[in-house]
Image (cartoon, rainbow, N blue to C red):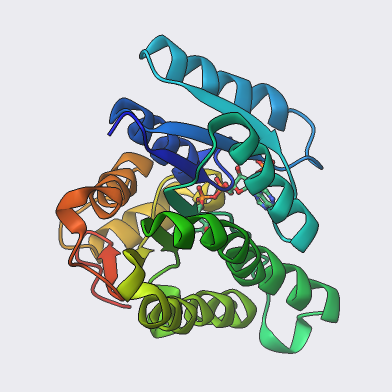
Length: 250
Ligand code: NAP
């Protein structure tokens, strides 16, 4: 495993951070990607790197806006320059701008689609070139249960997360014979900054509708990602794995 290299997009915080750290614990060399436009993101990415290194792992931080084609290419190029290969790509970045359908502006629609969906296309296209040459690759796309069921107030987010399913099925078919698998993880409610706006009452109500009786943690999602990245998951392709604790309503 020591030879393998993983890129995790949006890994300065939340689920991406947990995935980057868990992959490093499994001996992957990891590219930690952070969003250049937010103040403090570089410091957070450096903290992730420090955690990786204190666990004996190796990594780099790459500031790149992967919702653009140029940013995605830069992320892959810097990873190749540092490590010479890309074996695992976790398309994790996401943003939600909850809004009733009639109030979603053109800009909000575009930002949510570009961040959640186009980023996966840009990063996968850039990384697949090297994966195809090596005849090995794992692409793991972080969608959401909302991409399966839809959700009021999230038409743009759900459209992007559903889009990731069709995107994944297609690249799984296109590249399966070249040793490359593509799968989706669909988290339910996970405790990160994205769900931090929920108050105590809302959190309790949501937990009530989850079979295991609690919201998920970033580590819950990271466990599934590490498994899908591993050789044990070689024959798992074009699948959606829900990590939602048995969420009843979606
Ligand atoms: P989060 O805490 O908001 O973290 C999102 C990460 O993505 C941050 O590191 C952010 O960087 C980065 N990012 C956003 N736009 C970016 C861009 N254009 N380029 C590079 N990095 C960018 O979110 P999370 O809760 O961990 O969610 C991770 C993924 O899981 C998302 O795709 C989300 O949709 C999905 N998900 C989350 C939940 C949940 O309940 N939390 C449920 C289902 C699915 P900055 O810190 O610099 O902004």
